[in-house]
Image 1 (cartoon, helix red, strand yellow):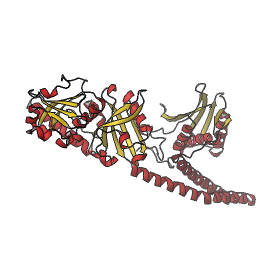
Image 2 (cartoon, rainbow, N blue to C red):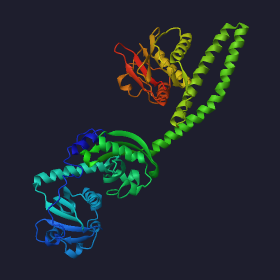
Image 3 (tube, helix red, strand yellow):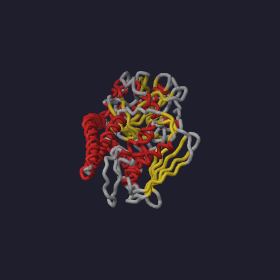
Image 4 (tube, rainbow, N blue to C red):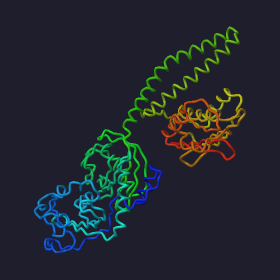
Length: 497
């Protein structure tokens, strides 16, 4: 378990850290051999023994335990354990106490206990009365104990000083094995700062935030059951915050414990929202005058052609071309804004995909005299999709292929069946290809592929992002890859229905 923590923390800190153990060890479920109801007779045993009732009050303390604390019986009996040891609640031992009181399972912890100034083996056994605790000096030599404690201190200092919040939780499942809550077992200093939750250890999330969204429990339940780690961003509405989260399972599957590293990204999300609002407003404001300018350039071009003014006709056509580029840019900004808001409706109809691909290629052939665009199709069934949006996606990928291909370069567009449910469209070029580090980000918003030995190409990095969103909203998949002989291949699938 401790190595798992080290491995998963390595992504945050490059220097290796040799820790003995960071979190409490949960041993096999061993019941210490106490005779229930007779614990008060064990005043002569060498180990320290004390008993708590269901309300956490001390109802018995053995002579050896009192000797450890240099206390009298009346100093402890009748007082809550949290009053006797104020620092206990925020420690690993405190979290184990709460877990054992909750689920009735015995536990053992070997740890350095500052109140006793040494290493001890603590055996916790729930009983009908409450909890029996036996404390024994741990058998490690002094030379073994202190380096371990020093290393443990270093690790706790590290995890309490990192910006990321950390917590260890036990996911709780109902009788149908469905996750419905989780209990906090361990937290670091940043946890309180980024959640505003105090004294979380031992409490459940439902106790703290009764309306906490179900998807949090489902995600952590999946991690606990499968062992699959996950990174995600999500909103915690009752906490009024956004979080970036990395969750991974701790220990064996039956323990159902999940370690969570997370960061409050509420301010970042607020700034993104402001940026998206600005883009949306600016795009709408630009769209109206551009529509008028486009109409006037078309009218001007026709009038100059009628007058036989070839020189000014050519200039008017160039002007119209640049206005078209501006209109496309604004439309891309509008699409991006709508996608981020979740406002991206599709108008689906059944149509022949080969007809659409042929139309788009003919448009590019008329506008581009230099690149050779080859169409390679196979008979496929009509597809049920948004014809205009699929045409837009095709146009974006072909435009990208032309942009990154040399003059007279060849571009091949292929259409084929995948199976009975999906068809596939691929666009291959013989251009500069995609730098390997960029392959995973090529469909990100505002991302522009490039490297030190690649020239700079115009564009805002929105075309492929919008294309990927169009395909995703249709229930398809999209990929990008490099060809061995140079160039790139973009492929996407579409469901027939």
